[in-house]
Picture 1 (cartoon, one colour):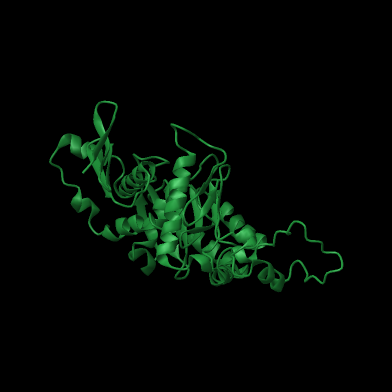
Picture 2 (cartoon, rainbow, N blue to C red; picture 1 turned 90 degrees about the vertical axis):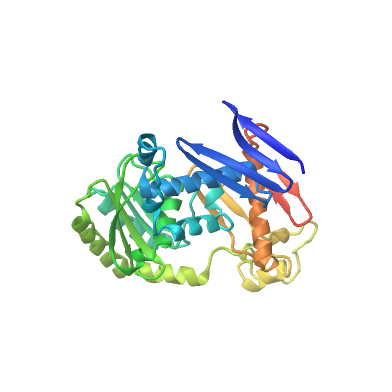
Length: 352
């Protein structure tokens, strides 16, 4: 067995490689987090996952838990995390399917401009009334997000908050008002979150610094719900869920070089049959099977649905791992960052 150690400043262990296994360490004050992996994920990805697990812990406890260890090194925080197994299990599972966990960006539910504007307008009115953040979500995708003046919600905080809400069954039963911490916003203090599910998939999160704001936020929710129903936002959200996201098969075909269209009978360029004709059995244009695009200016990403060429769970996970490695390589501090990178392996060709 080959054992490799990597040290950081102060001679603390950064990571260990033993055969096919990597052991990654993350030290946060008195709290040590350890990951043992045989997935061949980059070190940066595994460390980022530990950061998110630590962040999820802060969502529940805030960083003030460190003071408990300083006062009593034998302090056991297990009782404080009681009942949160599903929260952490859900987060760990997302490391295998949710690009937001390594892109540090969020994605939006596909909706028409008018529908999103209607949702955004009423949330903006609520934010102007003293709400710090107002977010309308469908599962892990954003419908609309509004922050008070000069307040911004980091994508990692949004990921952790959405995971906390979706994996806690109690939030689905009735409207809730709960203390939560946003690690990227302020890791040492609680905010207060009003959470309400409109249906099985769509929920509202209103965040405030006021611990006595439950009834005010309840009134805000009623106003929001009235507008969403009148403007058919909720029905459009369900329709978007049924339609799914982007499909590479629906992208316009790429004209073939050297082929003259003069005198030939061509289907209209917007005809579905034309798409099928051009992309038959090869995914999208030029054989495209899948894509992810991340905007560094908006902290958002968009990705296509899996094509028929990537239909099994094993293929989808392999694709996800390849994106992780490509992203880590693109942003490697030692040899990067790179603006463009092309890779090819036995399964796929990649470009970033």
